[in-house]
Each structure stands twice: as structure tokens, then as C-alpha cells.
Amino acid sequence: MEAQQKGRGDAVVLAHYYTEGAVQAMADYVGDSYYLAKVAAQADKGTIVFCGVRFMGESAKILNPARRVLLPDELADCPMAHMADIARIRALRAQVPDLAVVCYINSTAQLKAECDVCVTSSNAVRIVSSLPNQNILFIPDENLGRFVQAQVPGKRFYFSGGYCPVHAQLLAEDVEREKLARPNAPVLAHPECRADLLALADFVGSTSEIIAYAEKSGAAEFILCTEPGVLWELSRRCPGKHFVPVTPVCADMKRITPEKVEACLAGGGYEVQLDAALMDAARRPLERMLELAR
Ligand code: 13P
Ligand code: SF4
Image 1 (cartoon, rainbow, N blue to C red):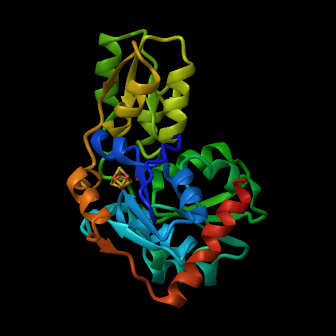
Image 2: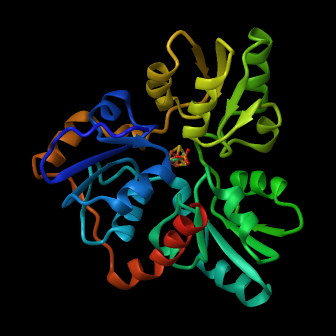
């Protein structure tokens, strides 16, 4: 999560923990979605090369529209970012009084533009708790939404049925099997996992929270229920500890390769371009997230 300034003139390279290790090694800043959104908002270089999926590059552009934002691969997209329906959001707003529409940052700019506040996995509980509204429509990730709901009593939640195809693929029985083989290994899980799996976890948190937990823990071995890209940072920060990943890889994150990052730095890549009015509408919930999570 630290800055490793590589001295690249007028470009800065940001990478999510789910990209491959060789990509993270090239980056100036590596982190989770919240950290990278903050770095992007403050970036003062002319070009941001965002090694991640499309919603991350879009969020960077929306928060810092004067910068040129490049994605190394135009097709790297998060399927969950599309799993909510604008017509249903508008219909629910008309029907339910005192409704806050809370949007996981893993969402398209069009969905963000319909929402009141964005959240990431590391700040969702804090932000939803701080909202005065009694009713919450949480889009698109229902697993993260139900995890938040369990920790924010007294509010009524509505969901859009979205899910991360990578984390939701992992079943509680897969983890139970691994626990039998390694009874002393704490289970570390991302809140995009299913609720019955989260019930088996010793720690639930965002990628950066999982890494920080593992670093402080006295345990020598861990069962890892998040995308295995985090192993690169875990191996740097937790020498001598052993991690058993049980989650499949995110094929979209793995579209980013060192060669494609080099191509961006050499003047190629895909430039994120969004309509100005759309960016203005989507900026409100993103900036509110940065304010409430501070
Ligand atoms: P965090 O970066 O908040 O841990 O979320 C993981 C993720 O799904 C990014 O796509
Ligand atoms: Fe989307 Fe899941 Fe991949 Fe994250 S891990 S980018 S939520 S598909």
C-alpha cells in the first residue's frame, strides 16, 4: 500500500492488489479500491495509468477529470459493476420514503449517477452507519450489502441481487474442507463472499484489511478467501507465513499485463472518456464517500 515513486515523468501508475504480481511490482501505488480512489483524486501527474478494471479507471477520471486516465486493457471490466437496474432504482426512490441509494464502487458511472453515496468494502459499514436514512438500497453487491446490514441494525435494506462471480463461486463446504486439513489456520474472507462462508471466517475485511490482519496475526498459516492476487503483497509483508488461497482468479484483473502497462507508458492504452454531465452526476456520491470515510 506504499508509494514507490518510479520517476516516470508525467505519469503515475496505480495497481489493485488483484492484478498479477509483476504488474504490482511496476506500480507507484498499490492498494485496495478505497486507497486507490483517494490516490487518484489527488494525483498531480498529467496521466494516471490505472491497472485494474474499468470502474476503477472511471472513478479516477470522475474524481480527477483534468487528468488523462489510461486503462492497459479496454476489456478488463467487472461483471458485477453492471448488476443493477436504473429503472428499479428510480421506481424504489418513488415508492420508499427516506431512501438512501448506496452504491458499491464496483459499479458503472451510469449507476453511480443514480446514487446518493458510494462505498468500498473497507468503509461500507462506517458510511452506511453514518447515514440518517432509515431505508437503504444497496447496489450492486448483495453479499457485501447483507454483511453491512448485519452490522447496522435498525435500518431496512433493499438489494439488487448483484454478486462478484469470483467470490460468490466459493462455497462454505470448500472452506470447511480446508479447515479440516488445517484446523489452526485462521480463515480470512472478503465480504464479497457468500454469507454462509463469512460465518466460518475468523476475519472479514477488504483486501488491505486482510493483508494488515495477516501481518499482525501470530498465526503461521491462513486460509485465504479472496482473489489470490493479494499473495504478492502478503509474501512481501508476511515473510515465513503460509497462505492457502481457495478463491479462483479474477480473469478481468488478470487481463492487465506488464507489457500492456509498458504500452500505456509509451503512449498507448485505452483512454477513459465520459460525458461531462455523467461525470458531474457520478462525482457527487464518490466525493461524499471520500468525505464520510475520512
Ligand atoms: P477492495 O479493493 O475494496 O478490497 O475490493 C476488492 C474488489 O473486488 C475490487 O474489485
Ligand atoms: Fe469484479 Fe469480483 Fe473481479 Fe473484483 S474480483 S473485479 S468484484 S469480478
